[in-house]
Amino acid sequence: MTEILVIEDEADLREMICFNLETEGYSVKSAASAEDGLGLAGDSTSLILLDVMLPGMSGLEMASMLRGTMGNNTPIIFLTALGTESDLLNGFRSGGDDYITKPFSYNELFARIAAVLRRSRPENAENEVIDLGRLKIYPDKGLALLDGKEIIFSRKEFDLLTLLARNRGNYLSRSAIIDILWKDAPYVIDRTIDVHIARIRAKLGPLHDLIRNKTGFGYYISI
Image (tube, helix red, strand yellow):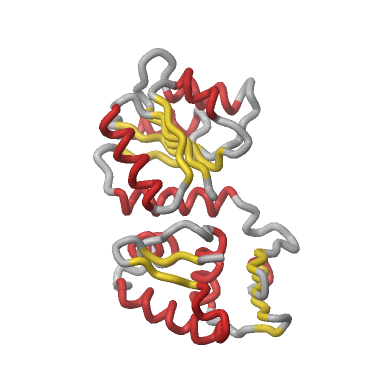
């Protein structure tokens, strides 16, 4: 399960973020300060949600320490009320991978998390294989094999299947999928995702129930 570390000093917001992440299927750890967060950032941490304005050490200082003396390359998304261009640049300079200003919607947060996790994984690595048992996906080759036989998907169907496979066990809402795969196509609606999912399921045949949907949460791969 993908583990996310949340570092936010505002207790109510921290608890709400953790609750929503756990609802999406993520494993969550949390801390109220950068000092405590440093002790929780381990090898199992897949991503850090980091508030900039923290008591004691700031989020920017923590990110710089992680990237510098600690040699930790875990993806970081900054959460902050500071939204000027200068603030954003400072966030990226300190080692952040993305920057979300408060207040934010949870659909936006989930979409950003999925995008950063996708970029941090070896998407274009040669010979990468996503092994789902009888189904094998080769992202760099655009190839999917079911019991050793190729399944022919359209480009978007393949991208959608790969996105779900990379985030298996975690829910992805329709809006999050649209933000990731159709971000430059404003005409895309929720029904578009449902149609693509139906086509993928049909082509998966005996594994059609690999992709599941939970009302109010989104699609996910169960394996």
